[in-house]
Structures are given as C-alpha cells and as structure tokens.
Length: 336
Image (cartoon, rainbow, N blue to C red):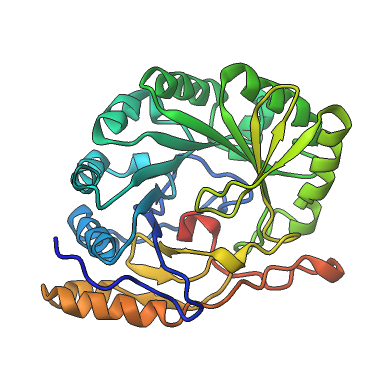
C-alpha cells in the first residue's frame, strides 16, 4: 500500500479517524435510533466487503490511523469477519493504530474471540438500562441477558469494554447510580451521551427524551468527588475520574458543549457516502468513483475533494423548545 499526502481539512485538522458503517441493518430497533418498521437499503446499493476494504485501505494510505466499525449492528453483516481480518493486515504493518467497533452486544458471545484474534482490542457496547423490561421496551427487539452474555465473552477474550449510555429523561434517570456502580464492579469504562436530533421520530418526541448531561453530572457530584481529566481519545468525550471508585467516566455533549474544534474524523456509510460532519447534511459520493475505475488516484482525489468541504462544526441545538439543526437521516444511516 502506498502512502500519499495526509488528509488536511480547511481548518488545518488532520483527518486520522474514520468511522465506517458496514450495514444499515440491526437486530434491535432502539427508539432513538430507528423507526420500528425500517425500510432497509437494497443490496446492490451496499458496498461489498471487498469495496469497503478498498475504501478503508485508501483512507489508511492517506493517514487514517483509527478505524471504528459501526452499523446498524456491524456483526449482523454476513461475512463481516473477513473485513476485520482484512483490516488486521494494516494493524500488522503499523499503518493502522487501532481497529475498534461499536455494537449492541447481541452477537458478541459469538464474535468476541474472533475479533480479538483479528486485532481488535476495544469495543463499545451500547447499553442504556440494566432493567430487563425497560431494555426490551427501548430496543423493541432486544433482550438484556443476551447482551450481558456478550459482554462476559468479550471480557473473557481480553477485550477492553466501554459501555455507552444514552441519557434519556424519564427513562434511565433513576439508573444513574446503579449503572455507575455496575460498571465499577465489572471494570467497564463508561460514557454518557446526550440524545441527538437524528431522523424523523414520529413516535418519540425528542424534547421529551432530552436529558442534559450537565444535570446528570451535577447528580454524580452530589455522591462522588469528580476530578477533571485532560485526556482525549480522538473522539468527542470529556472525561472525569470518580475518586471514590477510581473509574473514568466520559460525557459526550454535542448539544450543551460543542466539541467540534478538534474534530479529526469523518463517517463513511455502507453505501459509500462520506459525511464530513455528523450534524450536517453535506455528503460526498465515494461509491461512484470506487466503482468507475480501479485507478486509486481517482478515489483519492474524490476523498480529498470531500475533505476540502469539511465544516468547522455542526448545528445541533435544542434551544427555544425546538429541535433546531435536526438532520433528517436516522442515526443508523450514518453509523452513530
């Protein structure tokens, strides 16, 4: 693989982090992520695993060092391990520094060891409640024991696990301390995320779901001593340490704290669309140049042209009791 000039956006940020959605399908139907009766993409629109490999390899040749695989649920894509194994060669070469995935955990019992064998060291598991009934309600199709079994399998395979909890007003507010305690007991990292205005959710009112993390953090500070941590992991989270337990907790606050100034990432969908910003509609089509020619320079130029349009920041806003800056696509479309 040839190394070309690095990707630099108009604000002098080097693009080193690619999030790639390998499927729009999922075996859950989480209420804040997708509609219950989703219409999924026709197969011919999806990039093949070979095309995804070629695209990601091109990005790695242009300086991407961290690759996060998302979906939908990435582990429901047929043959997905061939993609992870393929990306493993870039870990071996040293070009790729980290290969990770975000998952709902439903398939981890089956895939944890093969993922570890392919070079994955960390996984993010989306888990918003530890209550069986509430879990079934919010995921619609999911069952909590299946996910907990997957987490156990991931731990047994030596994977470091981070639990991602979407803060939902009136849903998991009362579980704040049980979730923190459970993660401490299980030695799991934990990040809370503000719900984002993604997609037309007719059956769920966004404002009713929105629980600002400033409030969540204030509640934590009533019980624990919070120490600000300076560290960044290439993503948008800000971290604190709970002195009483020693655990690290992250907060992703796209609405109450704009985290765009150091953004070094772009998102590739399973159809070859490149979103330069999660909170903007601007998109570049990489599938057309990918399928038009085997010439790597054509694809590289399409990527450079897209990065030249990367904005400084997003437009998410919940002010004035109106979901301003809402983008029309569902979260599952862009891969979280």
